[in-house]
Length: 213
Image (tube, rainbow, N blue to C red; front, side, top):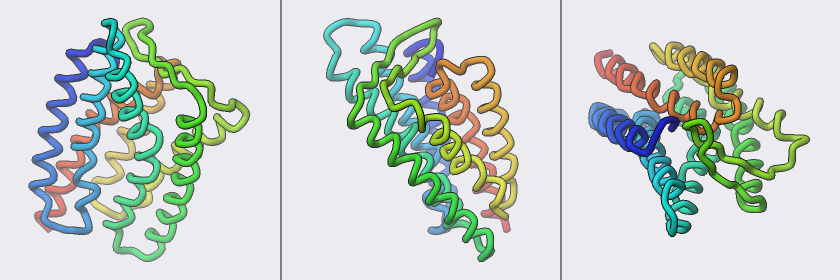
């Protein structure tokens, strides 16, 4: 998250609490993965709090490594696979399920690219202009195309889904991505994850709405 370690920890704890409430509110096994999204986002934000702490003090190389890779695992490897899969499990319409399955495969391709990149190339977190930038040496030629696949996998299922209010989550996520891309492009991984984490609290409303039907 941008700003500071304290903000990351505070935001992470708040989102984690909402995540616990969302999981407890859900009683349908088909929504179990989806209801856990805010909880995972909360843990992800807390991990970036430790990245801040490690970067702002010396002798915390192990903490920096663990926290950075935990954050990045969720940000670029987990979400393009987890999100479409969780939405697909909730979907009752056959055609929509098939479309979301294709989007899941798209996300898997993006996740594999980022996983290989993290394993083979250095990623260096650094503080710049009150934000964290995850500088990396990933191969540049396919990077833009892979990011498009990432966006397709993480955003499109929210509009394809027939679940009530899911489109609202998709709209908010898309708007936050556009804002981040325009104003915080250099820090997109960190800042968009922060926005997405806050927006994920809408999932509580989606789960609550389905519980009443």
